[in-house]
Length: 72
Image (cartoon, rainbow, N blue to C red; front, side, top):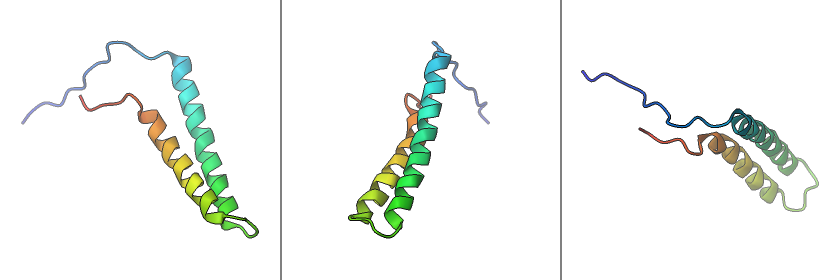
């Protein structure tokens, strides 16, 4: 069997950049949930647009922390 080893990063990201990305992801996730809620409530002019925007925001919130990640 092969031994699994994790490749170490050569350069660590600044803590402020990581914290900002996590905060932005959290805001995008909550905003996406709000957009889906607005789209599914009554009285919207184009409810499908709000739902699609909400889904895209949530997807971006999950994808943003993976920026720069790669299989080593």
